[in-house]
Length: 78
Image (cartoon, one colour):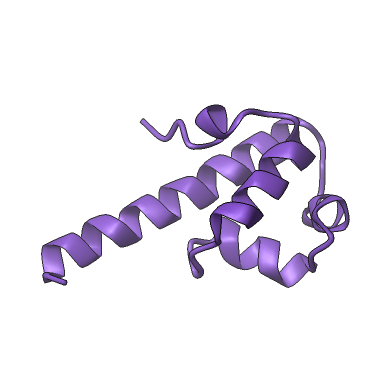
């Protein structure tokens, strides 16, 4: 993978994490709240929101359901 593509990829991962955090905070939920609803752990949610890990589509579906938003709303990063 080229460096430019790698940087673009990382920017997207970070943007998605920021979007998830934005939605979560707007709903007054903590990372622990989302983790419990997703049957996950708080550190996994923290890593996703910080853009330090690339979640699977299954995890993104769980998060979107926990946040009560569609995947398209959750991935609206523009």
